[in-house]
Image 1: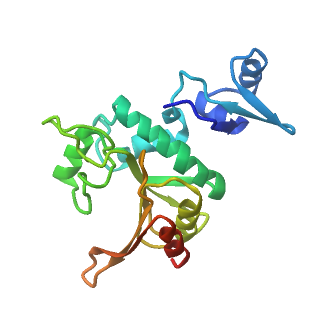
Image 2 (image 1 turned 90 degrees about the vertical axis):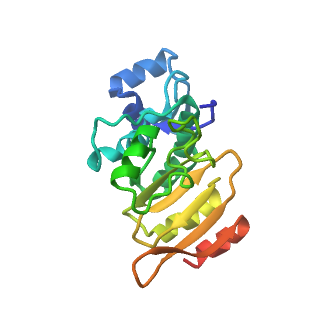
Length: 228
């Protein structure tokens, strides 16, 4: 992705680069890592040749399906999709995790191959042409699976209500779309180059089907989130 001002704590950078304390100190003192010192703490920039997909959140985005679907299915993104997945981590998932603690991705990136498998074997509740899980991937006909582009995931935070998470995102982060399913259910969030800032509250019919409820855009989404 394009170089950002995103900095990682010592714990975070060790997890991404798989370093010991001694290895991290060596890379810092030999100038192999850009860093800032704040008080007694060090904060590091990711090396240019490393992807944010190496972060534990990136691994969740790519490997979420292995507990539900065959591990042999390829789920590697194209370079275009990779850009938006890294943006999703940097602009949405990392800030949420830093604010509320660990999050679990329940539905992440879906490659063209994985999208075909899910459509054939487990398509209930999915909308690959709209949901942005396929990011910028193309189908076998050469058409983009989801013409909206960007990238998306569903996730849940155990330490707080998802209403609090929705409020934090709408007030502080450049989200594209949020689909809010309830206080204790995973929430769908996406990102794009030109975010719509669309908050959609999903309700449940008497038959148990998910149906669209209240919605808002821009600053009105902040007001709507405060009423969740």
